[in-house]
Image (tube, rainbow, N blue to C red; front, side, top):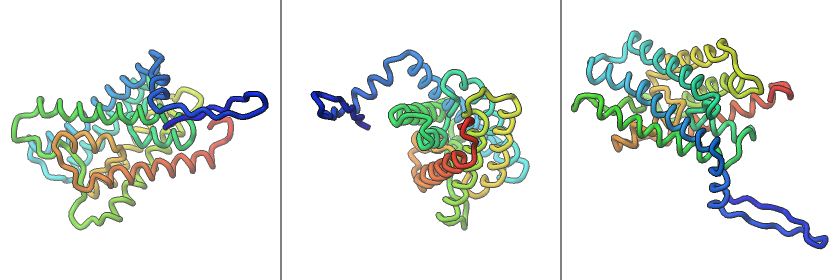
Length: 257
């Protein structure tokens, strides 16, 4: 997005429009910003390898159906992996690892539009790289959809969209209350994120696969070329994230925003 600068010249206000290329160049000028983007790329890549990999391996190699035991394994893997990677990347990039979290930060004005878009690009690129690594790790013929997301039978688009909004709202609100505050979160805060992720997975996994993360959905879809209902896993999480940002800003004490 182009930015504007207001300059005063002889009593007149002169508005200068900055090009998007200049804005991006300025954003990437610092080594800290580049490290943050690399952190988001690496964290998203590892999250897809661990999360989507667990889904793909238990389905393609172990031939397990989606029963309660497999659901628990998948939910725990996603929750623990996300918690550990957020903790690792927190001092590097803020530990978003999710376009929905980044979008919420933009809505809450904790992050500029340009920086947010760069984060989302890095997250999606990392997710695609992670899915590609899975194709190198897993035996041929066992990929399936690489742990991609999709709607279960008899689940309507409206139901899927609502489910993604609800579970993403839970996750993003938990992150606003812990990792995105003014102080560094304690271990209890990171554990709360992991438990929120696990509970949300257990609820929505049989419905939509419990995305809550557009990059997590994008990576396998990009590598496998499977885009059916992909928009649900963008619109739902982004809407839930925006709602969480607004609700948090409304309820949170001013000094903790």
